[in-house]
Amino acid sequence: MAKPNVLNFSERLASWAAQAELGIDEYVREQARFTLIDTLSCMVLGAAARQAVAASDAMLFGLKQGSVPPVGGGSMLSITGAALANGARAAALDFDDYELSGSSHASAPVLSALLSLAHKVPMTIDQISDAWIVGYETIIWMGKALGYGHYDIGWHSTSTLGPIGTAAAVSKALGLTARQMSNAMALAASSSSGLLTQIGYDAKALHTGLAAEAGLRAALLGRADATGNCNLWDSEFGFTKVYGTPESIGFREMMKTMELGQAVRQYPVIRKLWPSCAYTQRPIHGAIELSRQIQRPSDIASVNIRMPAPFHRVAGFGVPGNDAEARFSVRYCTAVGLLEGRVTPGDFGPEGFNDPRRRELAASIELELYDLPKGDTGDIGPTTPERITIGLKSGRVISHDMTFVPGGSSMPMTEADLMQKVQACGCSAELARAYLSADGATPLLDTGLLDQVSPSLRAAAR
Image 1 (tube, helix red, strand yellow):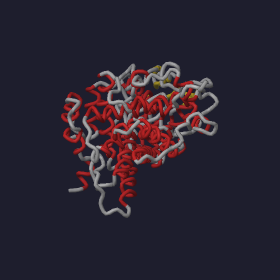
Image 2 (cartoon, helix red, strand yellow):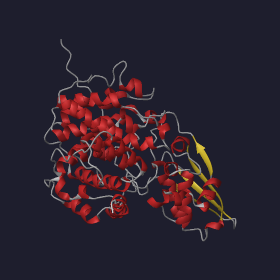
Image 3 (cartoon, helix red, strand yellow):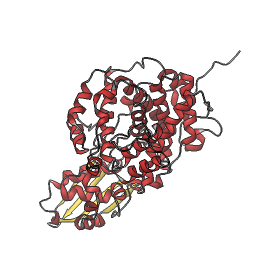
Image 4 (cartoon, rainbow, N blue to C red):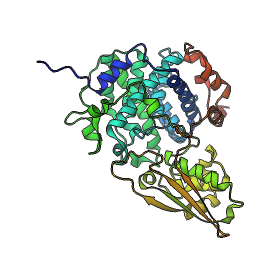
């Protein structure tokens, strides 16, 4: 008797994603719109950042003129070049969203490619929303198959999972068949790379652009009927074997509980209120809360932060020497929150991280690090609490316990928060609000969102 044909991961996901109707509800589509506004705003603000400029310059080498404008303005690029530039812009300030299944920045590579493609392939709001949903689903379920260990051993998940999620999303936007999409995902797996040790360097932000470029390219290859090994996920020398750990459950086991169309509900998008590493968000929130109990910064005698050691390995810079190190320094971010009672994009420029008061306080902060149990999911939540304790010169001790992460499901970003972020990024709150409430059949290019120019690039052009 012949064995039944069991679909592998990419085949099963593609057979769902290639349907005209994904069977998702309005809440999921609302999250897609919210996410596009959030991520696009990061691209506009990051357009003039060092990493973003380098990405555009590299894509312009030997190219007189492309035909696709990157988000935020600048010289026209090729379709894949614009995807790379968009990704670098989205990630340059580390203001883009993230998820906790694969510990990746899921939306930036996916939307970087889709917003480049949109200039060549007309899309409605619902169509780009559905494409993002497919990309997010892909990344979430891959993250569940590999587990936190994939990230913890040193892989930058945005760089390993991002190309494959992007390939699935672009395949959806292109209307590829399930076979073509599955092949595109397998082809994108050949671009999975990127190490966490690049944090603190321009390479970290460029990983996002490279993932967007690779995923878009893989989908275009899939469209041209190029093939890949669609059984690579759990094969002897396949994805789980190479990128996983002994604790990884793998794709076959993951698919037993995979609920396609439910990733946003099971693993909500986490949106940042401050432009710095995910592992600094709770300390910033705690520092701002404690700053309200401190009359004068000079009253601070000592600061202690208790946090998981794996989180500190990522956000472990001390007194920063550049903007990238500042965004990944829990000491610096906490010092700014305590001294200023707020944290803004401007705090990560030279005037911010070279401020003597901030540097002195950051250098004095003591860390109490604890290990996570083997096999821990790495969630930034109740199982991995953090605490800031401040000793005042008066002898008084104040502290703040941090369990839930700002911007996560228990402390979600509100529409008012989003509009504040949109404006801080130099984007139009009016256009953003209109997008959130527009008819889903509205062409994306008619919304005006992609016509916005970075304030920095606009000023430089004068």
